[in-house]
Amino acid sequence: MSDTRFEFGENWKSFLANLDEERIQQACRSLSELLALEPSAAKPLEGKTFLDVGSGSGLFSLAAFRLGARVVSIDFDGQCVACTEQLRSRESADESDWQVRQGSVLDEPMMNALGEFDVVYSWGVLHHTGQMDRAIQIAADRVGADGTFAIAIYNDQGGASRRWLAIKKAYHRLPKMVRPLWVIAVAAWYEFKFGLARLAHGKNPLPFADWKRKKLDRGMSAWHDWVDWIGGLPFEVAKPEDIIVPLTNRGLWLTNLRTVGSGWGCNEYVFRKD
Image (tube, rainbow, N blue to C red; front, side, top):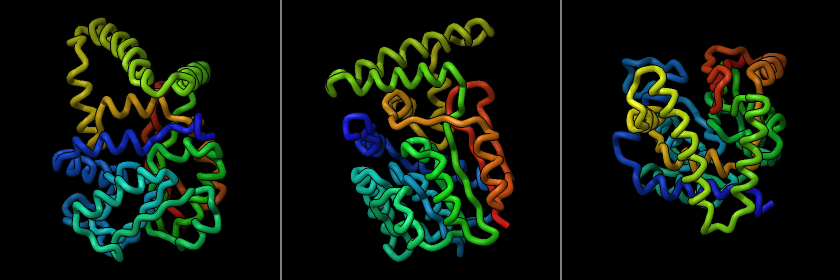
């Protein structure tokens, strides 16, 4: 498993070197919009508990903390845990208000021991566990009464998703020092295609505007997203109905949905528990 599991923490450690206040503020806005929080409230999550399943860089745990929540962050990857702890330390947050733990969402006894939360959040994580459906179920069980479950899952594009899986497997077959070159090659090919599409629509073919929007989209980085996307294994995908129907059957009701249509990337789902 070690040779086919992407080192997410290594990528996020690099990302933190470029994390500035602008990105943090954008992450706060993004989280507020996704959860439909009161825009005029300084701390709309005040008094709420927030479980970040797969905290990665820790950026959205930090956003939840700044929005007033008491946060528990968990991640399987030790380097991700270290990244999240680094952000907690930079924020001078008390451990009683922001706990950081190493663990897997698939460890059901550990997850049950955490208790229930007002918000359970997992963006772009559960499809990397190798057991996506089970991971979604276990995470959903941590949502308390009248709580919110917010997840983002890779869109199933059919054949295109299978081709992306082949690209990801090729990344892991390469020596570690060669992998960045593979990322550059794949990203350059797709950026070239995107540029042709922009040109065909009478727009500037250069990617800089798109990269800027990436920063404005959840405060992320175009390069680190490419590395994550091309290297990220395990890798599973789902159509919206594959997510919505099972969770509805478990008593969660869809309140917000953002899809990428037939494109690649993550569909975002927000559910409310009765």
